[in-house]
Every structure is written in C-alpha cells, then in structure tokens.
Image 1: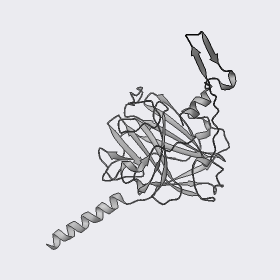
Image 2: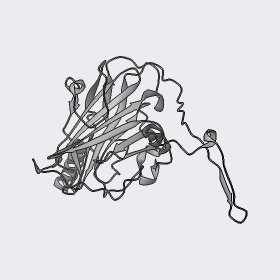
Image 3: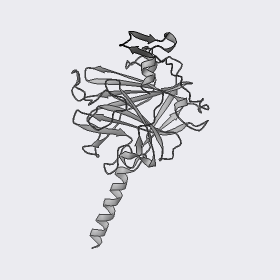
Image 4: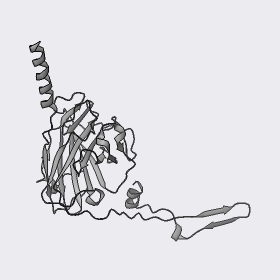
Amino acid sequence: MKFLVSLIALSLTCSTVVYSQSHDTIIVKQTSIAIKIDGVIDEAWENADHVKDFWQYFPMDTSRAWNPTEVRMLYDDNFIYYLAIAKTRIPDVMGSYVTPSLRRDFRGEANDAVTLTLDPFQDETNAFQFGVNPFGVQREGLLTNGGNVSADLDQAWDNLWFADAKQYKGYWVAEMAIPFKTIRYKEGSTNWYAKFYRISSDGPERSSWGRVPRQYPIINLAYHGVITFEKPLRKPGANIALIPYALSNYSEDRRNGYSNKRGPTSGVMPRSPLVRRLIWI
C-alpha cells in the first residue's frame, strides 16, 4: 500500500514538472532600420533575438516539434514586428500548403498558419491574436476568459495591421507589423506575455512556444512565454484609421429613354491597393 501511494505521488510530481511553466523569454530589440513587410528576411532581422524550440501540441505533447519554426521580433516607435520561418521536414522541396479559403479571418485546424498571441496586461485572461498563412491571408481576434474553449476567440474584432508571406523550398516566411495603437497596454511596460503557435499540414502537426498540454486548447492563455522590450514602452496613440470611399448613383428609365449618372464626387469605390486592404477590415 505504501509503495502504491509513493508511486502515485511520484507520478503527480513528474506530471507537474512536465507541464510547469518556465516562461521562456525573447528579447524584443529596438530597430531604426525600415522593415518592409514582404516575407523576405532582410538586414533588419540579422541582430534580432529569436526562439526556435517549439513543443509539439498534436499529435503528442511530450516532444519537440517535427517541423522546426523560428520566430524573431523587433519594434520601433510605431510598430511591433514579428517574423516566423516555418520549415518542413522535406528540405529543398516547394511545400504543398493547405488553406480551405483565402478569405480574411480564416479559422480551423486544416490551415497551415502561424499565430502570435499578445497578453500585454499579463492577466492570462484577455489577449490579442494575429495570424497569417503561407499565402499572406490575415486573421485577427480577441481572446477572453483565458482561452479555455475555442468560443473564447472572437474574430469579430478587426483592426489595421499588416502582414505578408512568401514560400520557398523547404520553408515559408511570414512577416507582421502591428501598430502599437492597435493594442492596449500600460505605459512604461517592458514585459508582455506572448504565445507563438503553428499549424502544419505536414504531419499533420500543431506546435507552440510556450508549451501547452493537450487537455487544454492551444489558445489557452495560462501557457505562454515572455517578450521583453529593450526600453519601457511609450503611451500608445489614439486608434484611428481613415478609410477613403466614394458613392455612385445610377438610374435608367428604359421606356422613356432616360438615364441619370451622377458625377465623380459620387463615383465608384477607388480600386487602389491601399483601399482594397482597408476595405477588408
């Protein structure tokens, strides 16, 4: 009997060690180099701190990820930047990446994607989530109630931020630029909780930094790492985005041969890339 009790106690202790949070840290360095969001790793990223020891979440949660993922982060006065290098187990082969839809705010475990979750107030209850797939399609949402169930992710929240991705042989690269004014945080803060996770159709596999046990959703906010900024953050500005638009009006009476089309002040919606990007929001 004593042996059985000791064995149970040892098992519980080992379980605690396996899933304890070490709060791995990535240092977010300040940069003065302009970063172009295009899925290309340029000189701005050379000195950025990085993490690459992702843990597998599915199909098992007891080993390192099969498909290596590396994440780097930087920031300047206006943006926090995120870069992910998502590798496959088959080098020198252009990947066959899966996405059921190219619509914004895609969702589901059938998508190849990388995701960044930010918890600036470190309450493990509420967070901002940003994701992108190998085709550059964006998604974002708000996490509430600790992310204990999938319904805690609200993708009705939309905001202005930028992302792109590019595919290479054996890997793909995602870049994000998130305006500080999009995120709420305390002025002067230096540490935020954060999570990086990846869904890969090669395997299939899901993996994360920090480590998440399978009995919880991968979005659970109790399991995370820490991002540390080089300097205390300034107060974020007002979150205002202007979306240019125009209206048109056209009527036609075919019986009497009459038509009326108003002038350019109420013309069709402009078709510039900037406007198309903003219309998605």
